[in-house]
Amino acid sequence: MTTPTSSPASTPRLGELERAVMEQLWDRAAEHPEGESVREVLEGLPAGRDLAYTTVMTVLDRLTKKQLVTRARDGRAWRYRPAGTRESLTAETMRASLEDASDRHAALLHFLDGASPDELAELRAALAEVERRRG
Image (tube, rainbow, N blue to C red; front, side):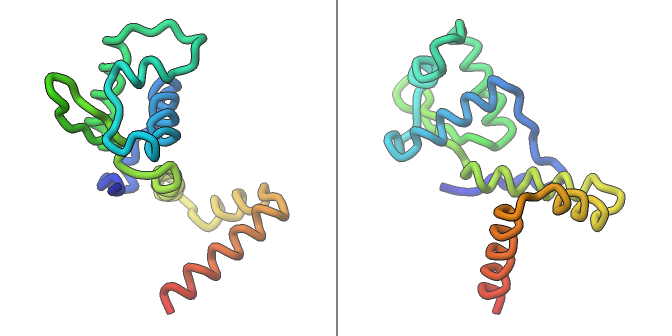
């Protein structure tokens, strides 16, 4: 699986239905490494949604254009797979938010001021791991 190649400044924001489709593709990626058809995505969405096949097809097309999913031909249909992980999209979104801030230091301080002790411990551990990797 590859990571989307969009730059942090162009990280796409997801609408509610786009998010639901991405969540399904991520959740089922291990079971369906070949990807899912529009019909499979439609059938896997929460039962409370009354969606048309063409609506899901349009959402998957938009996600493809945003480089969040890849698609491959399977007969007359397309099979869709996430182009990256939840974590990679979250990281890109965080970077884009920092790029949008006029004062990155202040934005980071506000973020950290709102973090729980557990979240701060996770951040310290992640920073230590990155420093080890960079040697």
